Structures are given as C-alpha cells and as structure tokens.
Length: 72
Image (cartoon, rainbow, N blue to C red; front, side, top):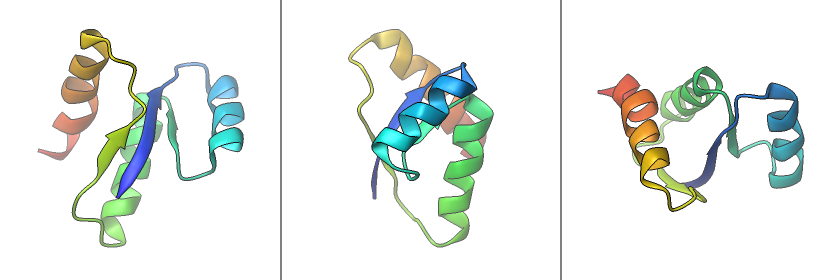
C-alpha cells in the first residue's frame, strides 16, 4: 500500500489538504498520522510505503523518529 504522507501541524490546513488528496492521505499532525496508520494495520495492512515526502533529511528523520518508532 502506497500512501502520501505530510506532517502538518496546522489541523485546519491538514483538513484542506486531505480534501484535495483524498481521505486516505496521511496529512496531519503526528498523532493523527499514527492513529490513521494503526487503522490501516487493524484492517490488515502488512506493508505501508510512504510517498510524497519532500526530499529533506530532517523530514525523513522526523518520520523515522516520531512516526515509525511508534510501531516498533
């Protein structure tokens, strides 16, 4: 499963982004993203590939440390 991911601390802006990309997009706060990933896992997702992350090292580090670490 490939899902667009974008950490957005402004929930109002995140809601607008999700409306444009679709409700499946992981656009939102860290807790929102973690919760949504857990929902995918709960219904059987075994592998999730994140797409759309801007090519900035600090963003990849943030995803690793704050999101992926919640599932290890």
